[in-house]
Length: 490
Image (cartoon, rainbow, N blue to C red; front, top):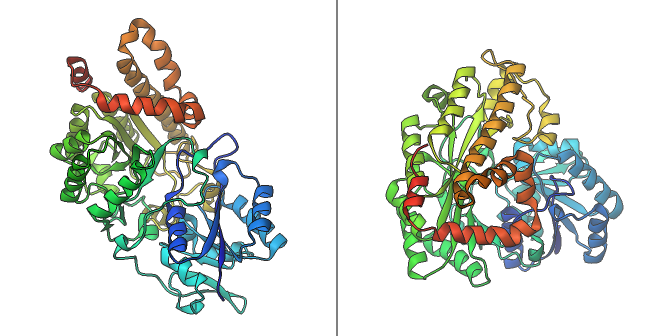
């Protein structure tokens, strides 16, 4: 069967008071694949506030023969309800993909009988083959129904040449409704590292595949010419290939692009050096997050992180001295971690003038070694079917306990983690607002409060008008004695 008209749908997870900062990259790639193969599509991003009535109206007007839904685990039961409503009203075929599908695979079709297809891992080629009518059993990476049973066509090999994929141009997307004039770009796929808590292998594979410098620069230039000056690099391993990073910097410089670059998705400490960070800073990078996970070598080994605390310290120190806005990411209460070791992570952030410290409540995801360990040792204290659909990393509710840390202890640590994050943010704001003198503590206190920070990130006026001014000021901040003082350890 062929499909000529596809409605792409992004599931909503955040609620009515939230709006996304930028368009979804994953769906953007799917849309571009359809566009390149002359398959008509329309898009509804439910994170923009579209109701089920909006969806029904769009389906009636566009008349698709396939609805493709990108799903994450958060709120997936609500997504199932939406799928049931669509199917009951229009009898249209429905395909799902995304992280939730890759994690739960055949169970998605078993739990929701209205789903016809589930594509796992990369779906750029899968959706085109499905639309072109390729024999269903020969479309790799697809779950489908046959004689009342869920059948798998076999694992699809990762796309080796990702330069062959056109970058998203978001044709037909409601670009003016996203909160910021910021563009997310993905310059590589896959991760060769084996962290026990990470599910990226089940989604993007264990082999890293990188776009060429020309491909990356074509995307940056495309959006720059359309007025986008701030870019968020969304890779798991952007700095994996040092020479590629330096070549991208040289190309940005040669084109005289006046841009700001955020590395807020995180980098590995062992994959940066001072010269690389300086070159990135020269061409507009102003923000970097470093995945620390734990300030203890023993815990890093338990997590199979492949890094030492000494390497992490050096990377953080370099980024601070180069006057980046530095964010540090930690996990709270990894299996085997003790009360004292968690507090070592709290103390770690006091040594550096960082912008943010994120202490994540660990959510065990199916397909990870951590999940298997907790499940096999009967340490989970919540049903994955429930918590994967409702819990975010910032929620102060522990999902498992270990001999080292009880549920009660974990809850206390999560509360302490939030206070530590607020303290870090407060210190950062006071440093940036030194010109206000003693009055600096007022906006610093208000801006550091967890709920205020969340609200500011979601506020349209802040995102569209004030953040660009801030980004520009951070890029052009001179290396004055005052700026140098900011980069000295507290």
